[in-house]
Structure formats: C-alpha cells, structure tokens
Image 1 (cartoon, rainbow, N blue to C red):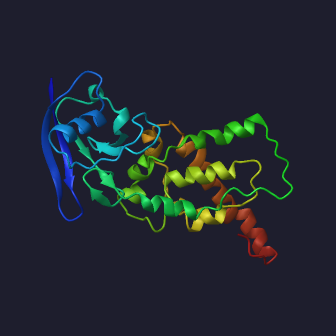
Image 2 (cartoon, one colour):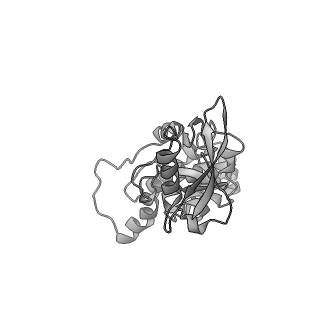
Image 3 (cartoon, rainbow, N blue to C red):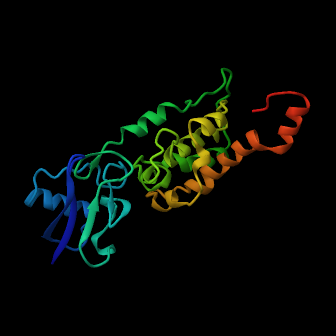
Amino acid sequence: MNSKFRIYRGNQQKAEYKDYEIEVQEGMVVLDAVHKIQAELEPDLAVRWNCKAGKCGSCSAEVNGKPVLMCMTRLSSLPEGPVQIGPMKAFPLIKDLVTDVSWNYEQNKKITPFTPSKDTVWKMQQRDVERAQEFRKCIECFLCQDVCHVLRTHKKHDQFFGPRFFVRTASLDMHPLDTVNRTELLKEKGGIGLCNITKCCTEVCPEDINITDNAIIPMKERVADQYYDPIKTFWGKLFKKNVK
C-alpha cells in the first residue's frame, strides 16, 4: 500500500514542504517512513534519532501539526491523506527535521543543583521518593517546550524556562533532603508567572508526566505565597521589613 508524505526540507535561508510517496507496511511508525524516504529517495534528508524506543527523546517533530515522537507514532493512528512532517517550531532550524535545542541546556545551567546540608542523614520515606519520581521520567524530548505558547508563539526564550525546566526544578524542590529555596529563581529568571496553565505541555508528554498539576501549579502557588500574600505584605510593612 502506498502512502503520501509531505516533509519539511531546507534550512533557515530557504525551506519548504516537499511531497513523497512510498510503499508502507502494517505496523510502521512515522520514523520508519522517514527512514524509507531517506534510504530510497532523499539520502541527504536530515533527521535526528537514536533509540527508536521512545526513551532517548531524539526524534521529536511535528506530525500533522502536533508535537510527537516519530518513533512512537504509528501511521495507522493518523487520519487518511498525506502525512505532514515538520521540525519543532519553538527552536531554530538547522536542516530539514533537525532543530537546534541547545538553548534548553543553557536554561538547565541556571537552576541551582541538588544541595543537601553538610550533616544530611541519607534516609527518605518511600512517599517522598514517589513524590519526585514522576519528574525523573522526563526524557528531554522537549515536546512540552515546543507546544508551549510562551516559547512557540511569543518567543520569550529570554524570560521563560519552559515546562521541561519547571519539571526539573520541581524534582529538586520536592526532594526532602534538598535545602535550596528556588522561588526567586522561578519568579525572576524562570518567568513562571507567564504560564497560564493551558495544560498543552501535559497533553504532549510521552512519559505521561502531569506537568501542569503536579509541577507547575504547586510552584506557582509557592511564588504567590512568598511574594503576593497580603498578610505577609501587611506584616512586612508594619515591621518595615523587606519581605520577599
């Protein structure tokens, strides 16, 4: 059976969608089709991939306009008609389906790492382990970053960490042995106030991390408590203290 595909080809200077038609077989995923086109029709087609098992996060792309992992998206799950495959739109294009995601690693450097006290007793309750374990599942596919309107539409990369790094911060803040208060970081450099909790990041997460409810909302509440609580503000003015 033959199927049609429209794949984004080019670089930042010039790019457009190009049509292809190949024979597909039952059980194929989008990445299989891209590899077949690469092998038979376009040997210079650029695509990033590694494990083909949904665990490395390398093959992120937009299929029919939705950010997905190509290796986990079966062709049979897509509607009839040409399958459109394009690069993530939140990051600069390198070539074809490959984008420059290095900005994400620069954001990670801004987050204060895990910092236990010098006299830490290395014991934890199982419930504390489970609370942060969800966030450890992140494979850094950056689909949540790609779908986030703050980055994708408004291009506020200089003001906003994005969902992936709110998850990273949450994994540290909810660790019972960590001693750092990262609330100011979230408010100032992280720009967590820009998030309007549309939950689009949660919807595209291939690891089913509840990014919005379990990571972002609790941290937004923490920022609100520390900076905008009216009682704290009142007592701060009363005693002439600079409450942060």
